[in-house]
Length: 263
Image (cartoon, rainbow, N blue to C red):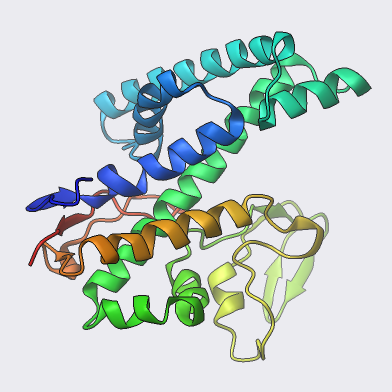
């Protein structure tokens, strides 16, 4: 966005989607001349509306474009490897003969979708919370000390990946029959009064700690303070109560984030 930009913009569309899309695209090795299409595909995925046929068509087109692009990239990187993740995966797969082309394409697609959706909605939720607060600049001025708490409260993933009970069990007073789906609440764990200093489970823990957490940190630390440095008078252009969230149990994220940039 221009330093002189003013008026109302959809911050989700203008900032929260394109920055993570370009960062992850560059990490994977997507050529710069495809970044525009990459951004459009990313937008179609993170704004999918199951009630809209037009949205469903855009989603299918985005998935087809990404699958085709990553297939071509895997083949191109095999011939001319670079300093990117796909090239590294190709080399590792070829050396050990353990990754097929389909697996490499699937891995790239998963990295793009998982990293994109989480970073986009994390940034959007942080912005919504700060812009609705009385003094967002106070948080930004003390960002290094307050960022952890802000990010936890804005976590767009309320649940861990679902599990299944392999035997009848009881947790507390609640019986869980064998085969039932179990959703583990990350919000519940991090807000537990007995937490007593335990690290947040936002990005997982131990061997299951998110590989993309450092990238998410870099994106948030660049995008969030950067907005308020450039537009210190930014504010929500609608009441906080009118912000609309996606109808999804998987990711708690906004549909749009209308913001007035200049006071």
